Image 1 (cartoon, rainbow, N blue to C red):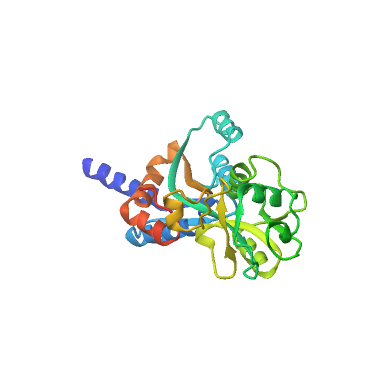
Image 2: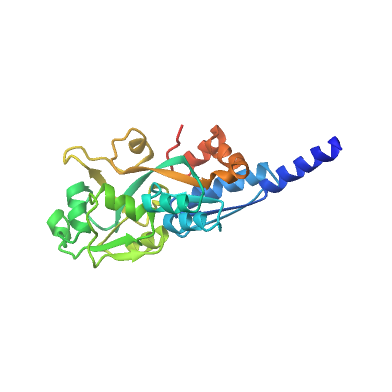
Length: 269
């Protein structure tokens, strides 16, 4: 009887490791995919699917039970916490990495740096031509993420000081779409996670005090000289802790954090 119980426990442990679903933030998506692939290589019984869609989509999926882990590039909102509470559930929050949010323009743009106030005025529609900030006489085309994006929320909070974006900003469904649009539009400006930076766009140095400008790099984000840095989260229902803990423990391990660093994110430890 004891032998049967041990076999049953092992079978349950193996099955709990299998099908795990991770959904949410497009910012977290690349590193979630890489750590999941490495985890599955080390644990052949594990099965993990990772999909994006935005932070809000991930947290909604967690609330309705269609994902096991929600990836988020912003903290869970009070309204979302209330939904969790009314459903009689409890959600655990884990910071898995940090990310610098880079402001990007077309590579031909001569502007190299902007202050937080200038960024606020651009994304609010008060500055509309690049010549107003030392650039060419060219209309500014503002690209933003859609409202369900945690990156959209964080940029609004940190850079716009919770003021509204201009109504004519162009909402993009994913970070990759911002890179593509900015790379093809000479007057464009947008924002992306540090890991998404590519030679197709040019990143700007940013200053929050108007004096000290820093470019978005791993070093400047780590020493906090670059001001637009935020935590990245995994959320899960506490009732599923046994299922998700092995994966989360791996991400927070030295091996997992090394993957995060190599992927262009800032390790937690």
